Length: 301
Image 1 (cartoon, helix red, strand yellow):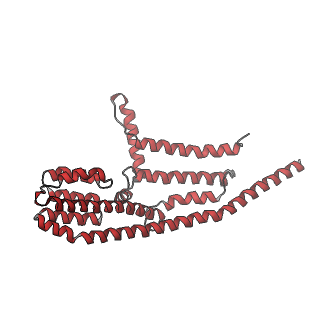
Image 2: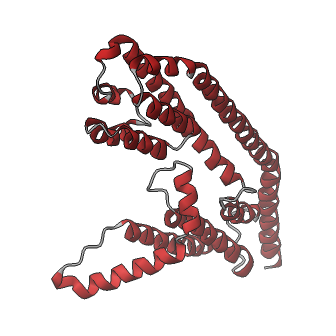
Image 3: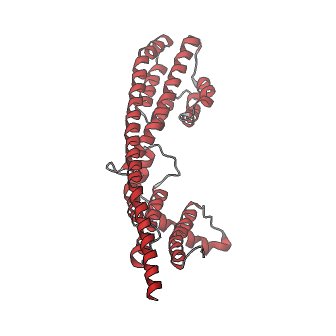
């Protein structure tokens, strides 16, 4: 027999909450459309999903995730759902080990899994916040690098065309394929540049990119657009070292946070390396005691 009865009970109890969580996740992602012949059913399902999403939804988390430049599919509902799944798994392990006396995995795993939802709390004192901050720094560093490239391309355009430069629309349009992080923003700017709405275009650039360097570039370009070509070139040249230093400082901040996160990961990995011999000893002790008990039962029988 591959699995004992206790193992099957454990697997079933563990599988049920995981399956329910999976169904909830799929239903929360599903776009429910109301149809006449299924009007009541769709209304019921939609209200049920909204109620569940409302329970897991956190405006504070959503604002934090957006400020951290995370993809839109990472929201408070999905994030809290993952935490809930870990909590359910930890509860199942606790029930098996303490209520049903079915010891399938070491008790230490209960504490490890139960601590994950707590660690995932995105507050400043928790590791998850620093991981989110590292992700933001990675994205911001890439954005700043592309901002600096854009600044150089604009300065070269002014040097090359001089008084023949009428509008940056064609330059921005041709540069789009060479950028990744700021490309959506550049595409949103194009209609405004085409209509000579420079201040609105660069205000949009500042708001959507959101970094300090992007705001500085936007302010500079708003000044440049309202002056002569000669003055524009002078202004662009004067800010060259400032942009380079700002990019360097941004890279330093990113590397400092990256170093701290890697150090924390190494510490956690080291903890599990140290604890592995104790887990192995616990498993050996448990197996040995079971064999001794079985042997005593046979002798007594």
